[in-house]
Image (cartoon, rainbow, N blue to C red; front, side, top):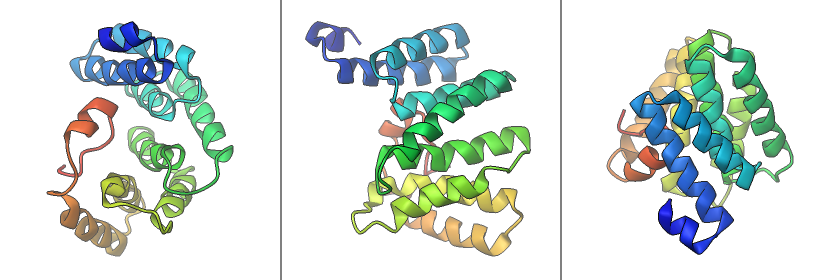
Length: 178
């Protein structure tokens, strides 16, 4: 964060805030996680990783109404973006199933699946983006679709040693290893 502040680069500052949101969230420092989230979103209101993590944080804390506001912003960013292997589609693909798991409400699982498909069907899809399959796997579990869950699990297994875990810690995305 200090280096990004010295450079005064808004993009790097937003990414530094994102990393701090996740670290604070994982440590249980909700106030600091919210503060870093607010700071990052002030720098870049469309930063979908921060929007997604903030939604997850609010839902984890039982603040569903607050979380819903961040989900709506996340989906607005996705809808305003051309479909493809971009973060604007990757984030909803894993955030929505996580929130469905927390609430038991799968109303938006189709949206998550469509976002995942937009990424996976792109000719520019890269193995590094395999972590979004975690959202698809969780969707299969939530729908009690054993065959789809088995397919997703098999797909995840092939990437478990290929996808770095360090970015997952920084961005809060699901770990392929788990």
